[in-house]
Each structure stands twice: as structure tokens, then as C-alpha cells.
Image (cartoon, rainbow, N blue to C red; front, side, top):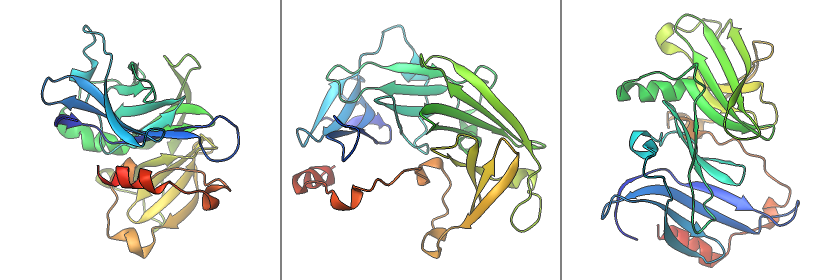
Length: 265
């Protein structure tokens, strides 16, 4: 594979032929702009071949999406609907099927109510106020406004995968664990959405992770980071990975040949 001019973060997608047990195959993939010819390619590692390869991404010539997209490397790459999703918090999400030898793009724009023109210097702040996540078998977009009050809005992607449906807007009378109200420039930021309950949002305040029930507009629990990671100063959603650990995980393993191939990249 040649040198890349720009690249996204890596995502992981699994597939299973049955409903229980370890996945039968997986792929690790990223989107890259190839330096030699400026073509957009999918760089991927397939478990079935235990090798890296590169596939050109099929993007319509009139579609300006890649040139405009500012893929947020601080946002978790999402696995949803047999596709990987890369998020641009200013515009939308770009998805592909990384198992395909002829991967085609799909793009879902953010809800029109939140679309605006932003300076690129504001992306870091937007990344603390905007989040996409998977919960209850759907893709969700969460938006937080913190100018005067802590207002949380949520949207779910429809079954056709093209439109966002507004689900809830909640104003929270936010009180931090130390019993004080946050200052305007010190608001907590979005960390994750609960995988089973879309109304439960996790956000970070200092060294604390706080769970909020958006339906009730109240904090329901709090946990402090372990001392071993408090010095890492997590500041993006990619630091947090909502996951469910299956019962078969302890007895499963990644083949040594696969680990060796992954470690070379």
C-alpha cells in the first residue's frame, strides 16, 4: 500500500453466521486519501485472509462530500447496520461496507436544525457537544447546547437510513457532584450514549463520568475514573467505548498469525 495524504481513524466490524458465539469474520478498516493520485481508498485488514489490502472507494464524481468532510479523529468509529460510520460533527456521517471488494459510500447529513457554518477552530468544542452512537438497535445523534442552560436534544435515524427523527429535548438543571453549578466555560461534555437505553447519556465532568436520564432530566449515577487513568485527561469520545462483553469472550482468542499481521501496521 502506498503512502496516504490523509487518513481517518480505524474502525472494527464483525459478522457472524449464527446468533450466538464468536463472530465468524471481522475487518479493520480506515478511509485514506492516497498521496500518489489523491484517490479515496479503503485500507482494510480481513480476518479471512489475514492480510492488508486496499480498495478504491466508489464516490460519484459530482459528490463533493469527501472534500468538504472534516472527519473527526476524536470521535469513535461506529459499527452499525453492517457498515462502518465515520463522523463529521459539523456536517454528518459517512459510511461504507468494508467487507465489500467494491465499497460504496453513503452519507447522512446532520438534522437540519443543527446544521450551521462553523470555523474549523470550533471543531474541538463541537466534539464535546455533539455525538453519534448506537442504542436500542438504532443510530442516534445527540446535541447539547450549553450557552445558558444544559439543553439536550436527541434524534434517531429512520429505518431507511436517510432521515433523522426528533425524539426528545430536555433542559437539565445541572448540579455537579461537588454541589456546584458548572460555569459556562466549564460545562460537562458528551462521552457516550447507553447501548440499551437511548434516554441515558453519559458525560464527563473533570475526573467523573455521570449518567443522566434525559427522559427525567436528572442525574442518576456517578463514577470516578480509576487513579490509573485520571492522568490521561480524556478529552474526546474515542476515549470511551460503550460495549457489551459476551459470555464467550473469555474462552475465545485471536489467532497468532492475525495478531502478527495487525502489529505490523
